[in-house]
Length: 115
Image (cartoon, rainbow, N blue to C red; front, side, top):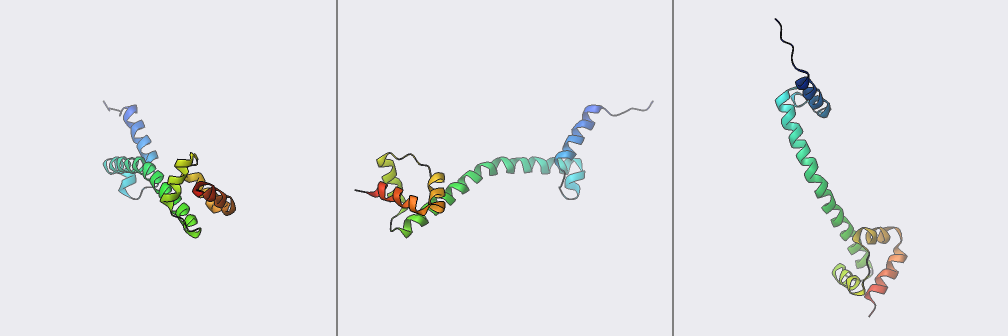
């Protein structure tokens, strides 16, 4: 008698091939290569979701620092002054204000660094 393969294995393979769509060559078609590539890709995706947050924070700090340097202040003094005054604006919001509304950012800077 002829043996038919099980449904579960077929479903697993189908799912794997669906996830490796767009990969090149054997990384898409061959089971072992596709599984290894998929595992590596998912690990990179997990890691880089966290790295992206770091990179954005770096970008926000650079934008705030550039806007402050134009006004003759430093980033560290400004952040310290904000925390002393109890202003609860995060770096994302500050960077957005610095880029889109320079006049409003100047008011925040003067209010924070006012003696």
